[in-house]
Image (spheres, helix red, strand yellow):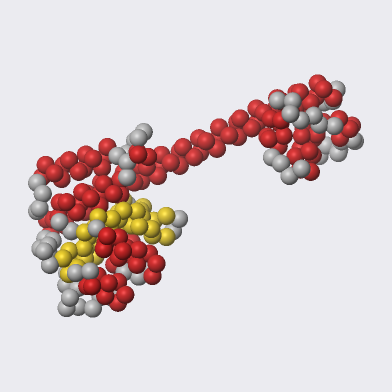
Length: 247
């Protein structure tokens, strides 16, 4: 295939290296698109699943980007079918055969493309997107060995993309837990401050915080922070109201 074995190995290493602490600065889909385009001399596009819809994540070649956008907008095309079915797709002669997607097919022929190959970005039951390759007159049809190499690169990228998504989910959960803990600490501190100022119980102080937050449309942790910083002094009379009977 076009490109040496060494080039394939280097691309796999680059894809693997794009996942980790600095992955936010590494565009893995673009690395895949550019790397595969350089190896097999095709235009390429990477479409990823975002919240149930395909989006154009990267492209090598403006025509490939335009065709990918057409698929996203119309919901029809080889990339859409490949993602839906999870199996590779090849259309080896766009000139003599009318594809199942007339809008996309006409645009592809108009751009000078003669063949399309789409490989799923899939790992077990997880489908993250597709890699689309577009060949022109100047590009020989891809053979079985080339397509096997492309699929291997797609598989490596899929593992990286899944890892990135896992890291993002973990970071989100960690941030949510940290926020919840910090909010609870603020509230507990504010309860103590209010209890001391108003000479009430801690439970009555919490009622003060909660009622003020509700009546002013604010988050209770925001009110607590203002109480602690002495930017807010709550009236004590609320705490003197009869408490509801315990359930």
